Image (cartoon, rainbow, N blue to C red; front, top):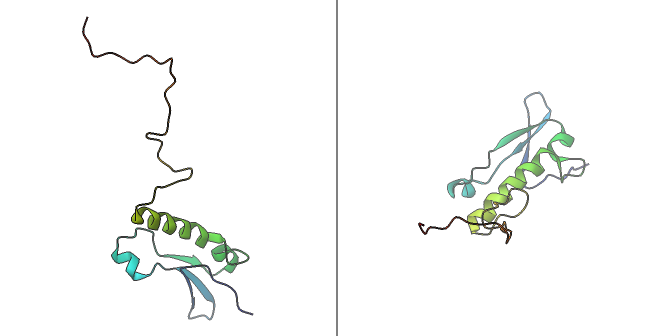
Length: 102
């Protein structure tokens, strides 16, 4: 039976015979300045990759990588971490200080 691996995940056989999973960003993205860390994910498939290969620790790291790629391409960041600058509206009844002296 072959288990599906998420993007950027590799499996390596350890000296004791167990299979270990690693999150590994390709070198070309490292050269472009990607800050998403390469990381060992452990030896438990479910923790590392989720039950179907679409979750686990790898899903969180792939989301970070996707966010970096969008930022690198110049696309706006959207979601709960989106900057609020310029997004808030000021109620009309709020008085601003004037710069004129009396």
